Length: 341
Ligand code: SAM
Image (cartoon, rainbow, N blue to C red):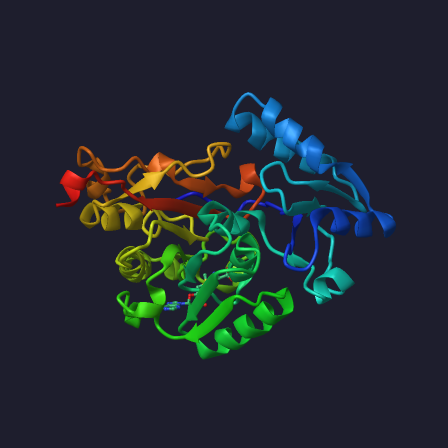
C-alpha cells in the first residue's frame, strides 16, 4: 500500500461557504486584515488553462504552495471556492469561521460534492453525512434550492451535523438519523432523487495527521478489517445505485487501500451494468490504480471488459498536498429504447 507516513505537512485549505458569502468578499476581508493574496481567482484560472496537462497543474499547485509565506494566501488552481493558506494558519477563532462564512476543509474532501455537481432545484441524498462538510457544500451547489436528504446512522454525529448545517445557513437540508441501508428506495419522497453522495466510514488510512504512533497500524489496517469495511462500503454503494431515478453517484473515501476503493467500485459495477464510470476531474493527475495490492488479487479488474478504474481520482498527499483520498463518479448509462426492453 501507498505510504502516507513520511512527513507531509498540509496547507490550510479554506472553503468559502457560498451560502453565507462570496469568494470576492472573503478575499477582501482577509486583505483588510493585512493578508496578501499572491494568486487571484483569474490568475489561478489562467495557470490551469495554460498548463500542458494534469501533471503540470499538479506541479504548479505544489510549487506555488512552497512560496506561501505567513499572512499570504492564494486561490486554488482547481476549485473556485477554495483559498489556500500556509500550514500553520489557525482560523478556529476567526470571525468568518465562527459565523460559518468559511469552512476549514481539506481540498480532497471538497472534491466529492464538486464532482457530484447537483444543479439548483435538484433532489440529492447525502447518505453518510455527519459531521456535514459535504452536506453544506451540496446545499451551496443547489444555491439553497431543491432538497438534500442527509442521513447518518450515529445519533451523536447527527447532532453535530444539525449544528453544522444550521451554522452553514443551509435551509434545504432534511437531516435523518437512520441507517441508509434501511431506507426504501421506492419511497415517494425520494422519487425525484437524481444525485447521491456516498462517503462511508473507512479506515481513514489517507489522513495525514492521523496519530499513527497511538495505534498499532498493522492491526488497524489488517486485511480482515479492510475486508469488513469493504463489504459494508459495497453494500452502501449498491444500495445508492438501486434508487430508481438516480443518475449520478459519487463514491469517496479517505483511504489509500484499493480494497476500500477501486475494488469496491469494480465489485459493485460488476452486478450493476446499467452504471459506468465517468472520468473524474480530467485536470487532476493521480488516478485510480489497478495493480495487485493489499495482499489480495484484483481478480475482478482482470476480467476483460471491466471498467477502467483510471477514470477514478486519487489524491496523493506528497504530490497533491492533501489527505490521501479516493473519488469515483458513477453515472447511469444512457440506454436505447431497445436495450431498455
Ligand atoms: N460525509 C461526511 C463529511 O464530509 O462531513 C463524513 C462522513 S464519515 C466518513 C462516515 C459517516 O457515515 C459517519 O458519520 C458514520 O456514522 C456514517 N455511517 C456509517 N454507516 C452508515 C449507514 N449504514 N447509514 C448511514 N450513515 C452511516
